[in-house]
Every structure is written in structure tokens, then in C-alpha cells.
Image (tube, rainbow, N blue to C red; front, side, top):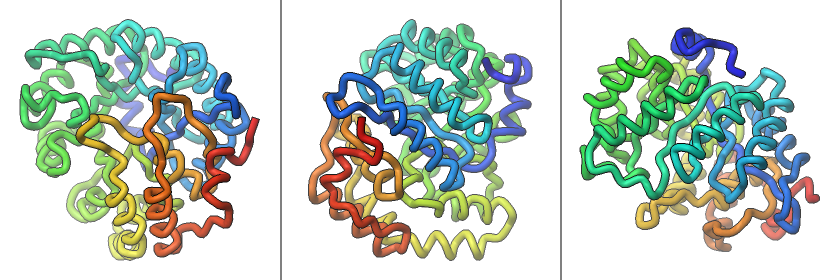
Length: 338
């Protein structure tokens, strides 16, 4: 259960949601019938070694509620309070997301990232509000809202969820504690408008490292997540920590040094706008390049092609982030096969 009440959730978030949060994608047995506990625990330890303060327990790899509950419990047990475990409200329906949130909370999740189901097709922002309010009212966790083009809400407002609606949600829903502000991406207008309006009330996250680090010379972000930061090894935590302490020279030195990897990440394009999907197989490969478990994923999943893997490998090598000796075939087995 969370270490705060709903009334205390924003105060808790302001104090504890700091630093950077990556993403942990579940590991599976070789036959894909069960979760791989040792692979999952390995990735939580590796996230701690890389310097992250939180990790999203990704729900988008075809697992049951029972499996997700175990995934969360193993992550929380391995983290042992050293890493915030973030529930991913990315299941099929509102009711399923509420049940998953309650289970994840009991298993040790610290707060939630709210997604919207693929079959949710609102015709007005009042429907987006109703879904959001119903989820938040039903769970004890603090909730991070997530305006982003993924939800196909831009027909309702160009910022995906209008700043005015976000203001209403923050005013009327007490356990909204943060906003992962990617509205109108790739523009930064959504982020900066939300920050201008609501940063004094809730935590504002920019999960795009290429944007948030330069912006921190002007805007005091305290948190950045959740994303595939593990691809950059220790770079994102180190950049963010330096910028948070006002040492923008160090932050930007690291920023420029990893440009080959950043360019590789952009070239591969892990978010595919035509499908509205994130290539979680590629994200898992990115983590594997930096010592995470890797291993097979269940179908349906987007694939990691030789071209994509070669581009990403060359990026981290050129940036001096990692130089893995294993062939790409080893990724599909994983470091802790079961």
C-alpha cells in the first residue's frame, strides 16, 4: 500500500518524485509460458546501478493481471525502497485498470502512470475527464496524468488533453500528483504551457532527455520519466543530477557526448506514429546493450530488425556508453534464461 493518503499524495510526490525514472519490461521464460523472476530482479538491480530513482513496470507485453501482480511484487521486493515502482495503467478497460492498480498497490507500487485503452474513443473532453476521475477515485495511488499523441485525442484539442482540462483535473482530483507532459509532441509547447499553469501545484515531468536537459538551464524540473533512458546507461541520471544542482556545463558536456546514441535512437524511431505503438522489443534491446536482461517477448510484439539493432549498437559504441561483446543473437536468449 502507498506510504501516503490521498490527501497527502501531492506533498509526498513533491518530496519524493525526484530524479529520473526508466522503464522495466518483463522478462519471460524461454517458452514464454511464465515470467522470468531472475531476469526481472536482474533488471531492477541494473536500474539501481545505472542511477535511476524510479522504474515503470511496463504492462504492454501481453501478460495477465496475476502475472502483472507478481511482476510488481518482485520489482518492489528487489528495489527494497531504493527505487520507486510505478504502476502502468495500460490494460484493456477502465475496470481492468482499476483492478490492476489495486493489486499493484498491494504488491508495492508507489504511484501510477495513467494510460487510456486502445478502444477508448471519446468524443469530448468531458469523457476523458470522466475516465480519469473514475480511475483516480477508485485507487489509493497518486496518479501521473499523461497527455500524449498516443491516445488519438488531438481531434479534441491540439495539446491532446487541453491545458484547461488538465487544470480542472488537478483542481478536482486530489490524487493527481504529476503530469507527464508530452502533449502536441514533438513540439515543446504542451510541456511549457502545462508547466506555466500547474508547476506550483503538481510535479511536471518532461520524459524527453533531448529536451529536458537544455531546458533545465531555465526551468527547474525536479523529475524526468518514464522513458527508455536505460539506453543511455548512466548518462541520463548524471545529466539530470548535474542540471538539478545548477551545473549546466557538466550536464551539457554529457549531453553532447551521447549525441551518436541520441541520433541512433531517433533513426530507429521506437514510437511508430502510424500504429500508435511503442516498439517494446527495441526498448528491451536498448536496455540489454547496457547490461539488462533482454530475452524473448510474447506476441503480439513489434520486432527488432538487424538494421535497428545495428544502428542502436553503433550508437552506444560511438558515444562511449557501452561496447557489448555478445552477438545480437544473445539478446533473444537473455542474461538469465529460464
